[in-house]
Amino acid sequence: MSLLTFTPEIEAVLRGDVLEYAHLVDLYLDSGTRHYWSRFAPLSIDDGNEGEIIYQPVGDRLIPPSTVSENQSLEGGSLEIRLDSSRINAPDDFLGGLMNENLLQRPVRIRSVLFEPGTHMTVPIWIFNTQIGLIDGMLDTMRVGAQSIMRFKISSGTFAYLERRQFNYTDTDQRPLHSNDTGLTHLPQLVDVSLPWGGEF
Image (cartoon, rainbow, N blue to C red; front, side, top):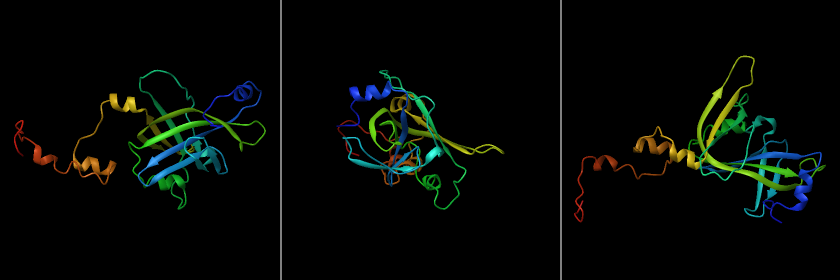
């Protein structure tokens, strides 16, 4: 059965005294998709839709949004996920590796997963609260005597479409986002050029 389907059994678990759940993050990067979750051992999940996905553990270094909710509104919104960046300079640190990627405007998916009680988060039974958006900004905060935090602002597609973007449509601006896209290299040739309807260029 699909882990995306709500069943009476899941409802019974939700009415129980103990809930075991965690958060899943999927980053869709140019080099491939990265899968992380907020526990301390790898997790294999087949949601019945995408096949098996192995989520790499980042433990409490992943600080999920304090509130994640679903609604029927078409209005865009934003979320923020935070990662402990105190070990970002370590050679094998996953966050340090992410900093070598093109992250801005890359898709990200955040989901919650509910587990069968008493299984120590090894038997997933329901995936819910799916949020999909774009990485719209990053901020690394370092303070003396405080935890170092890398903040990722996640905007929904609607939000990203409606807001005013600080972006110029030039080849120079396009390459960091899409390195193989050469579509804007010819743009300077079209400045102040009139193209009559039915004419030749």
